[in-house]
Image (cartoon, rainbow, N blue to C red; front, side):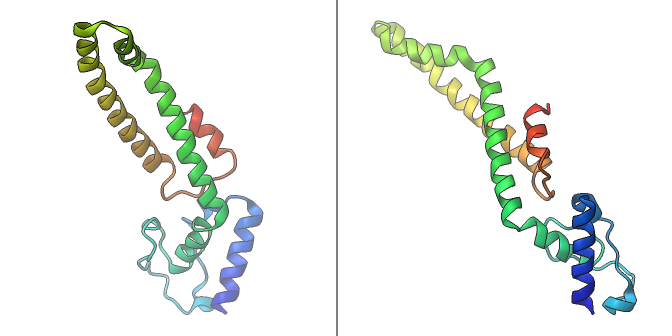
Length: 156
């Protein structure tokens, strides 16, 4: 009977369309699962807040599905694009300095490159840290719905 209840819980949450929030509060009757109502440890690293093994199994099966992996990959690309465009808005003079270093005479080009190259490196380090922080805050450990990807681009 535990497998039947797992299927029923999965189908019920799928039909409601609120699977991402329902898995955290999903509880199943102890008469079907043979478990006590006390919380148990979940084995999936992103399901730490889920109280029962059944809810953790449902979360894990949805979280590792092909659709969710594709949405997480697309979310990473969206966040990288967003942070790159935002970084270009603030660090465009560095890129112009590096470009000007190609056309400037000898003493000036060394000065332009000496300023531009470390600045671009620092800009890339800030970009990587920002993408990583946004990805871990908005994507990691969460079930992504269809509209969540568009909201990622417009969030602050």
